[in-house]
Length: 176
Image (cartoon, rainbow, N blue to C red; front, side, top):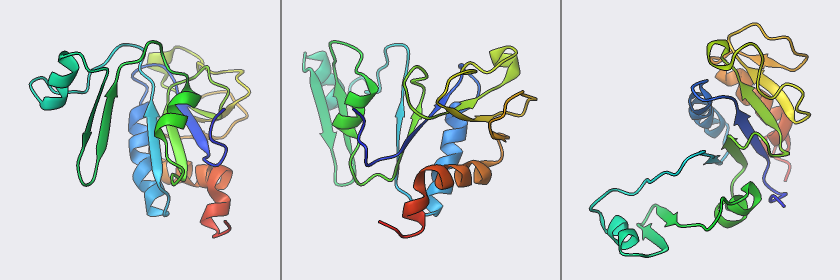
């Protein structure tokens, strides 16, 4: 299913709870510890990241099913799919083996480890993944009843240490 060699962790929660911000702050904290990070974001609606008028956009408009742009330091792929790709297929196609950790935003129904980002005014009274056996922690500034570790939104170093200890300990200690 999912590449076994790469640890992965999903950040889940309702819209506008700060998932993107938490991940955005975690990436440099984990990179400072020497880890290479990849991120996948799930979006519930169609999206377009291509820029109207640019060559790759024009290729897609002309009917290309895939448009790829490559430069000395980056590659981007815009690919039509006949169906929503399952997470494991996205990982297999696009995540390389040299990545130390894959952070995932969304995919809350997947059977993978999750940290919920919870904001009461957005979510209501309880986290959305309450009872999910894959939920391993909660990020919130609210009072939440749980036996799981709770981190505040600004405790980026605490969240990073939790992730390192849980998923990356062997790599951080120099053990292959």
